[in-house]
Length: 254
Length: 90
Length: 239
Image 1 (cartoon, chains in turn green, orange, red):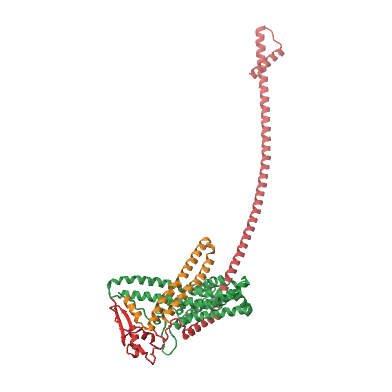
Image 2 (cartoon, helix red, strand yellow):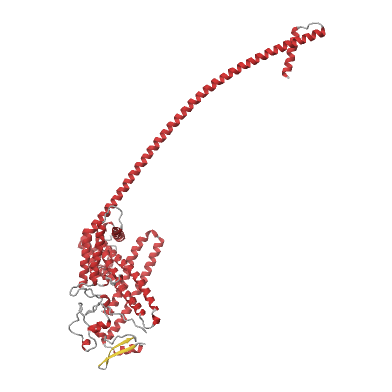
């Protein structure tokens, strides 16, 4: 009989400060590195000549920009939304680079698995789409188009308006933050579980159990590659939903 | 095993009782929360594949919409996961 | 086989823990873990928890026992509560990245991309005009070629016509000459034949006259002989 001693949950999620007496831990380090890496990529890209066909890092940076333009902005906001490209590009890059350390050795921690990061991003998106809506339609117009969607029979507004209010004001930022956070934390916990399980089996006293450890190890490898996909997909979905919300606030459906 | 568990239940302090109940309901919370989104995502992706097979030229649009739909549907299961964490560890 | 470690205090069951045989873990009450307070900088809080006071395990022992690596066990261990310092660091990083991209790097990159696309577009347009030029040049050339061809064929026709007329003229001349020569030759032949016929007729008439003279003794009438010879010669000639 073996038992897997799962560590206290905070020991895999809450990180000590790197320097004593300075509030800067691994999550903060990942966030800072995300900024440094993405600005370095773009700085190197900009320094290359734009005359000839782009190669190397410039090609990479332009690929990202075009992905954000064609895959996120044009699909959800259309041509009018192209002014939002730098914001959505920042969002996509930052979230992706915060997600990806979850599978990078020695980091092994997605920064977005801490509620602080997604919560900040979701609150920011909430503020931005509300402000954009008010700017474009005025306070009354924005409230009217959000709370009283056109094409609904008058009597149903008793039902629809509270739902729309809860959806636009509470559920949207909440689900935006929770989706990213829970996805990354679930992935992180899964990776930890299978890593510990295979470790426990490889080091089991009972020699029969040692080859069995290959099964959770394969699962670990599979989950790691799955996390690569999840890291990308969550960054993409977060940026796309941001674009959808901003687009909806700018152009109410008539 | 079962006898010990019964012993624990009989002799446990209120805090332990609460912990045990929280752990059990945490499992139920996530298990139940995963049913609906599981069905939903399966249906959603199945229909999207059908649409893409029927109209391959619209595949890009269908895929974007599919990811949006998956994101909305999946949120429910993830809220269940958060409830699991809250019950178990908070 | 698992071992059950039962902790009792004052005759009450406090904690039951199931361990496999190879675990070296000592018993520790759940409360100790839940109530242990370790500050984030690694310094344990001043007041030991009641459980720790009862001599079960101090936080240091606990940490060494559970073998925690870099973890911090918080006072209220809520794994999903947002931490202010992480929120501040990530917000700062995001805003810095946004400002850098929005105001410096993205416009530059985008300008470069747009300039290159404009270049490519103008290149394509330039290539289009060059192509159109080339096509019109080809058309001109073909037109000229067609004109030249028409002229050449006209010239060839004219030349052929002159050659034909010259040849016809010469041919007629030659034909006329040939015809004249032939007519002359015919005439000469006819004259020669007539002369030869006259000589033959005279000779035959002479022979016939002499034969008739010998036979009858008298000279026949010359006109009769002449007629007979002519008739005989004509019947022989027609035979």
